[in-house]
Length: 88
Image 1 (cartoon, rainbow, N blue to C red):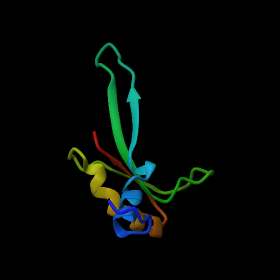
Image 2: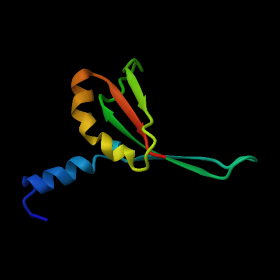
Image 3: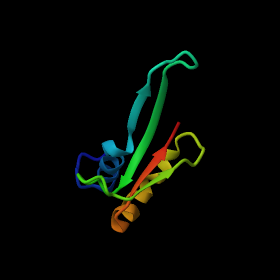
Image 4: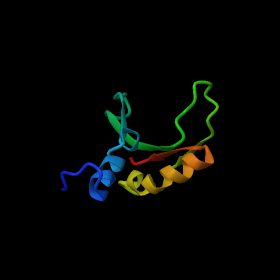
């Protein structure tokens, strides 16, 4: 990798490393299932404080599908919506 932080490769790596593209939460185990890990990505507009940001939930049905949504970020931000893409 180039040591220049403004090189196309470095810029692409920093874009893909956005923490919003790599989210996770864990559901505690219950009597009917064990611990469940849910990974997802959040693209587009940041949620506003009033909670009125339009949000689209996308469940494409493929593992690693949250990575497919990276190109959605710029489009969703421009349209003023937030897109949640569930991975598993």
